[in-house]
Image 1 (spheres, rainbow, N blue to C red):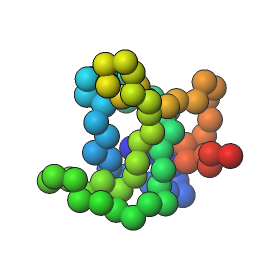
Image 2: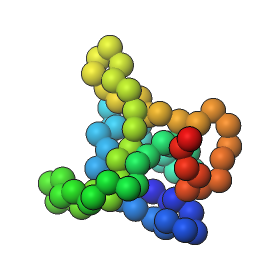
Image 3: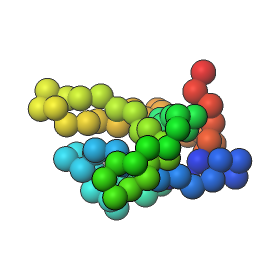
Length: 76
């Protein structure tokens, strides 16, 4: 995930494959937490936490801004 010039690119092990294909996520703005410690998740070192909500089927729907914002903008 690209968080812009100040934070750079980070990896996440978000469990979002039920509702999203990789090509749908390119360029998509999402809300993520970057100030947690890194965590080993299987073979991947997760560097940020992607936020979302469980739907009625238990699948994760991403938490997204409804307007364009600069990459790396802080959540208020």
